[in-house]
Amino acid sequence: MISVKTRCLIVDDEPLAINLIRSHIGKLDSFEVAGECRNALKAIEFLKNGKIDLMFLDIKMPEITGLDFLKTLSEPPYVIITTAYREYAVEGYDLDVVDFLLKPISFEGFLKSINRYTSRINTGQETRKIELSTTGESNYIHLHDGKNTFRLVYDEVIYFEGYGEYVKVVTKGKNFLVRDTLAKFESRFSTGHFLRIHKSYIVNIHSVIGFNASQVFLEDNTLPIGRLYRESVNGFLK
Image (cartoon, rainbow, N blue to C red; front, side, top):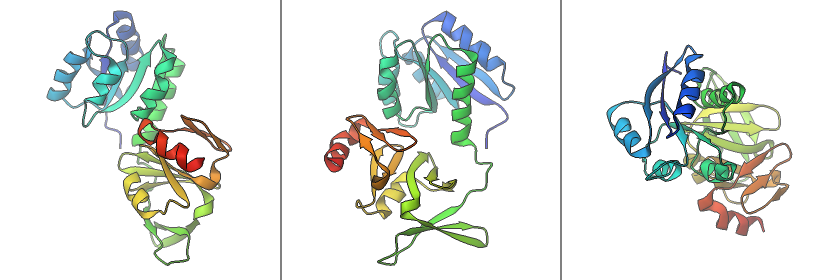
């Protein structure tokens, strides 16, 4: 559940950018600015001394870039990238950032990113435990919802999206949020039906209608291929 106040850290070397993000955050009752850092080195020290829920991170900064800084963190907070350079978006998503905000940041764009953040951590909807059928010829998942059990056939699943300790199961009919990890899903499924394409995504290969070096195209969506997965994914899909 979202805490009463979501603690935010702004990491940016531009005072005007800091002021704008601070102003946007100030309009939200459940968010607060816990700190402001003008470079990544100061941010490292700040993160050592206090809990941060959400970090607004610029890319082009002195001494070390925002993305290189993010790569050094073993347990980073949720991150929203803020930059004037659109070309860094793919690399940012490879690092599992929540969203990518292009400067100058409008309040409407800011709110969309906040909504993406809350959707990642909001466990207000009832969660289901997930269990894979172990019978040799059955291709379905059991979703347990209280005393009720629902069977979800593999072909109904389009993709799985990881949210830390939760996984969103996107299907042709509805979506489910289950308490599990993508790593556990990956260990259960055979490569003949599902394929890990990103730190945050496992896709049903039968839902893929096209791909390139960095993206997989589904009928109603486009998913990124993670940098570490590109060689194996492109080799498999070809």
